[in-house]
Amino acid sequence: QVQLVESGGGLAQPGGSLRLSCAASGLTFSTNWMYWVRQAPGKGLEWVSIIEPGGSSTDYATSVKGRFSVSRDNAKSIMYLQMNSLKSEDAAVYYCASQGYEYWGQGTQVAVSS
Image 1: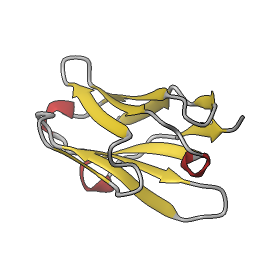
Image 2: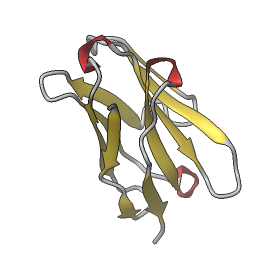
Image 3: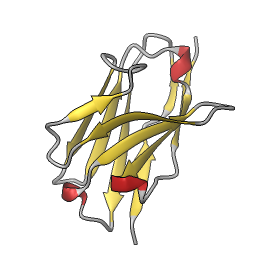
Image 4: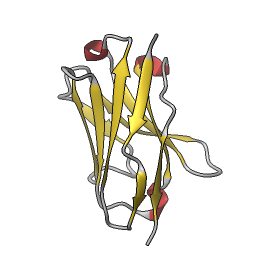
């Protein structure tokens, strides 16, 4: 049974930082492209980031480029999203998803407020 479990969400101040984690089990993590996707209140899903299986190639949505950084530890089957210089518009539920968006986690809530 495949499980993706996000953690690390919470409340941050504008300009602050958070690091999200996505722990995977039940799939061959090291061969999967992985994604971060978010959904702000009242809005649709927004793709945030992608990382290739080896971790050397990444890409980001324009809205987060230069502020967010995705990485992965294949030995631990964990993907991370380091979020810096947070803005109010970054507030959302953040989900991780596996290659082809086949499997999704339950999401972790990020709030940004002073």
